[in-house]
Image (tube, rainbow, N blue to C red; front, side):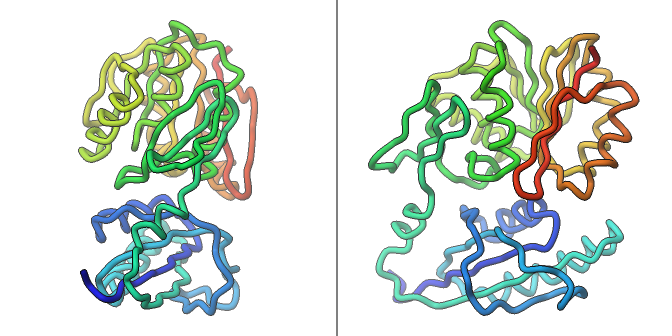
Length: 295
């Protein structure tokens, strides 16, 4: 066993979901979503002094020196800022630790949680939580364990719904948690994602939780006539999916959009209110969830 490991904390100033995807792809490790501890952070970006320290970010435990990761993140930020026309940076802190058992330290940071009617327990939980519907999910390279606000908002939105027999689509399914939650409530669920890893994780999580889906595919939206459409992706992608979601819906379709930072909410609404009505808006920290319907 290697004598030391590195614990690196990354706090993005914007687009944390894109950072999450980049970190997963670059490190090929599971990462932990966490509140920002009080530490002396370094900063990369063009907004130092004006960009407030984010309240949340990601922790990477690795046997590898973090310098290549930080260098790659700098290039990622530069490219992202250029593409979206918004200065994006990140705060970071790295420390070397004695390698006693960093896997156990990682597990200790991922606790069971309850979101509405759903309890989400990692497989190693010594004291799993109870709720009307219990789900078992471990953090992996696919996004979605219920610990992020965007996922929690959707699980809470699903809790009062009567979805038995309804036809649902989870777009950008990640770990499959949202489709799984709907399936456990009795919906007939299909799921899709453009990441092959997400497809494999979704298969695994449905099997682990003794749930079934109607269809699961690699790619974007297909088919139509869905009663429920759920999307938990960044705002720019949600806006880009508008035409496909409109085509896949019918007169009574309900659409749930999450992963939207409050600063981008009006851009999403400007697009979707052309055909949908806003039924409910919820927010946790800077994250917004929109419940829309044609009726």
